[in-house]
Length: 168
Length: 138
Image (tube, rainbow over all chains, first blue to last red; front, side, top):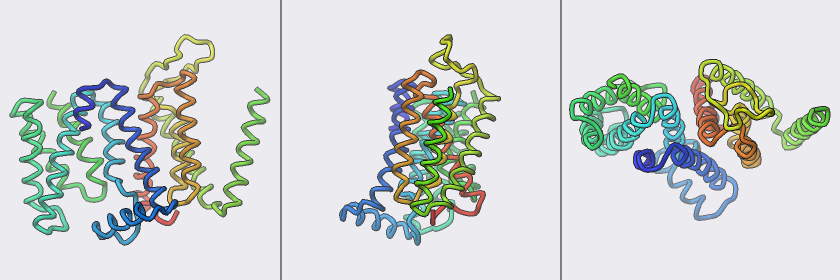
C-alpha cells in the first residue's frame, strides 16, 4: 500500500499518509490505555496476549518505526528506492514473520530468511530487473538476519533503500 | 518582541506548574532532556542539508535551512517524554498544533514537518535502545 501511495500520489500525499499513520497509532494507543472503551481495551489486551508481551508496549510499533524510516529513505535516497524498500519490508519481513511463526521459531530462522528472499524477490520483479531484484532481496535478508539489537522495521527499509541506491 | 518573550515565559511557567501539579516532574526533566537532544539533532541536520523554505524571499522568513522543522521535532520529542501518561494526548495535540502553525505561516511545507515527526519518533526509539529498553514506566 505504501509502495502504491509512493507510485500513485506525489511527495505530499506520501508524507501526509505516513504522518497520519504515526499520529493515529499513538492516539489509538492512548485511547486503548486511558479512555476505557470496553471493546477497545479488550482488543488491546488480546493483542498483547497473542504476542506474549509481559508489559504493554506501543501496539503498532512496527508500523510507526517503518513509517518513520521510510520517510527518511524517501528524503535521503529518493522515490524509487523508497518504493523498493517498502516492497522488501512488506513482503519480505512480513512473510519472514509468518513462516517463522509457522515453524514455531522464536529466533530468526533459515526458513524465515528463505521466505524473505523468495517473496521480496517476487515483489521486486514488478518494478526492477530480475538481477537487481535478486541482489536486493538476498542482501536485505542478510540485513534482517543480522539485526539483533535494533528493530528490523528500521534496519530493513533503510538497508534495502541503501542497497537499491548503490545498485543505481 | 518584548510581548513575545513575556508570553513565552508565561506559557513555560504554566507548563512547569501543570506538570508539577500532575506529579510528572520526572517526565518534565526527561522532556527537557529530549528537547535538548531534539534541538541538537535539528542543528546537526540543518548544518548538513539545505532545503528552501516555502516563504523564501519574504522579509520575515528565517534564513536557515528548512530541511526539518526544529519546532515540530523538539515539541514532538517533548510529547514523547510523556508517553504512557494520561497527559500525553495534551502534549501530542500541542505538538501537532505547533506543526500545523509552521505549515500555516509558510515556514515549512508538509514534507519538512512530516520528516521532523519521523525523526522525533526514531530518536525516541533510539534513546530507548541506548538506555536499555523502551520507556515502559513513564
